[in-house]
Image 1 (cartoon, rainbow, N blue to C red):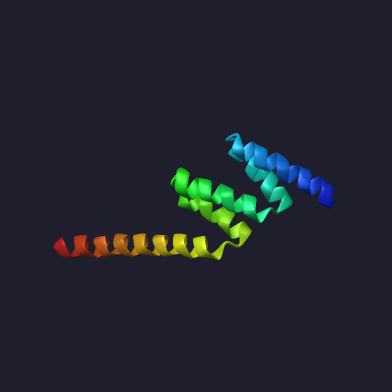
Image 2: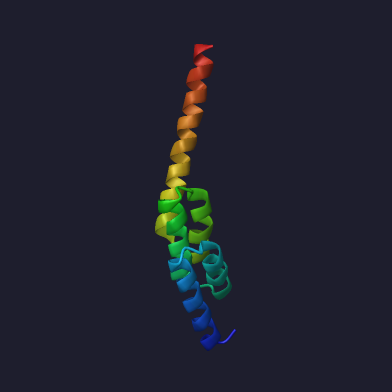
Length: 93
C-alpha cells in the first residue's frame, strides 16, 4: 500500500471512529498499522467500555507501553486478591 492510499484509509478510519463505527475503524487502523488510531480504539475499550482485555490487544499492537503496564498491573493485582481470597477461604474450612 502506498502512502497516498494509506492516508486516505486513515482518514476513512478516523471518520468511522468519530461516527461510532469502532469495528470498521479498528480494521482500517490495523491494516494501515496506524498507532494513534489503535491507541484511540484501545482507549475506547479501556475507558468507555470498561474492557481492559480488549484494550490490551490494541495497545499491544501500537506498542503503547504505559497502558500495557497499567493493565498488566491491574491483572496482577486482581489475581493476587483472588488467590489471597482462596487462601483465606481454605484456612476457614
